[in-house]
Image (tube, rainbow, N blue to C red; front, side, top):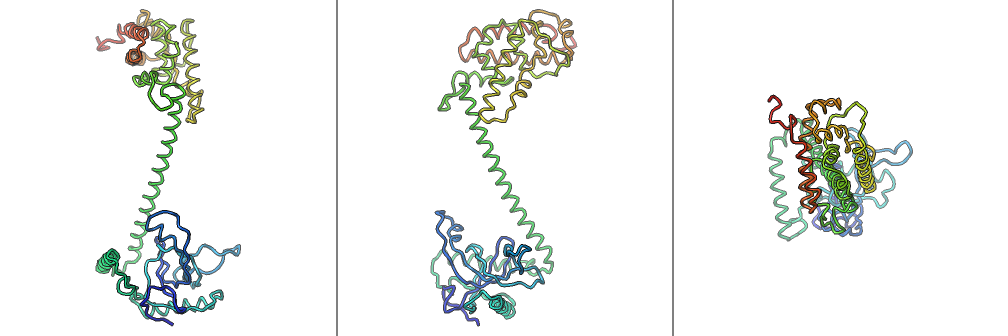
Length: 402
């Protein structure tokens, strides 16, 4: 029924070699090789892919019985105490963890269950005869392989196996604890794989967003078709307080050109975050048209971003970007009104008004630098004048307690 193997053939003279199969954390135990099929090459050069090109049909001890619908379930080893059946299972070459020296003779027809079960009895008998494990096939001694690299790998494996057997846990009786540690290692490995997939997913999402944002910059004229930064883009680079796309659009579409420096200060205040007023906003005529132009420009930019597949809601973008709650206050302050007068024009707290005015001064300085960078002298002077009109009184005092 069985003989010792001294050849590299897996099947010869109807004697079939035994192999040990392990799939991840699932140990299938010993099976018997029935056939070997070479699959077409995938072109990959890795060792795993080359080994995966071979499919080894193997008689393995499987959990018995079909599903309720009559079809066979995915093969899996029988549970402890369960009487299994031998079935032919295709096994990829990398899943074979060991080869035995012992060969088994198998019946010519494996379709009857009795024929397959006779192989199961033979395998179980061999495991009884060799309680320390079936004798392994040595690539160097038994297969006469003389490749120095293979010999070195075999020696390394033997050294590691000796260390494993010498470890105190190898003879430990607490099998459940060892299995728990093994399961923990498997779970940690799965976690690392999922994290890797997540990073890849986030990276792909970032690449898509980067490509879409580049399309927006090209549509708005900040960069050319080759990705080279244009005049508009250089101006936008100097602005970080307000929405740089919207601000540069106003600079280049002539909106600021038609305004005096008081109106410029009032319009620029729409870019400064401030507490929302509960009062209905009533703007004077000289501010209504600039605000309308600002809202139209904001809607245009939001629509372009939406067309370029960015996650932008047009109405929400316009509402969150354009904040006209202090336009009247800043306009009157710029024209010389007192602090007592302007705080009566809104229900926004005085401290919020002061903070907003100081941030507006920083923003106007950024606009002045952007205008200077693109050679717009008139705009540069207008932004500078708007700054000067704000810097007075209690709003810019060194201390509010003076």
